[in-house]
Image 1 (tube, rainbow, N blue to C red):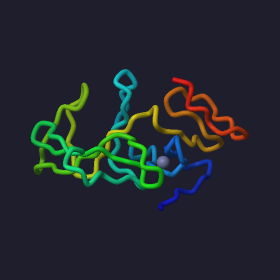
Image 2 (cartoon, rainbow, N blue to C red):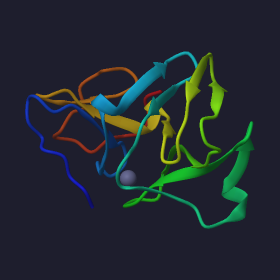
Image 3 (spheres, rainbow, N blue to C red):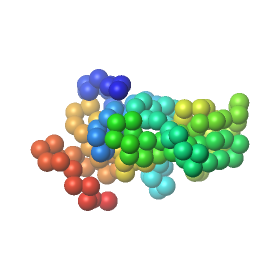
Length: 137
Ligand SMILES: [Zn+2]
């Protein structure tokens, strides 16, 4: 498992369920909160499934469901096969995509903002003393 330095000048996303470190905010290309998606250049501690059912096509690309490596919760999906120099419309954006680019669901993530852990979707602080209830939206 890869772990980022949990320091004030490093901001990153964590798995909401097990708090595995997932992606640095410097790799965030864009976010679309209306669609509930973060598009990132790369992520760590995620893997794509072995099941062919996990794989779909998006334009000329192959995308695969992406899971947290530790707790196996689905966090989003990853570009698994991309022709060279393809530009794909993802959500409202036309972007150049590469293998390893990921689209993650903010509702499945926490966010380290340099001083505390927040829910990525709402930016509400996570109460560290109690385990998460998974009940908020
Ligand atoms: Zn996890």
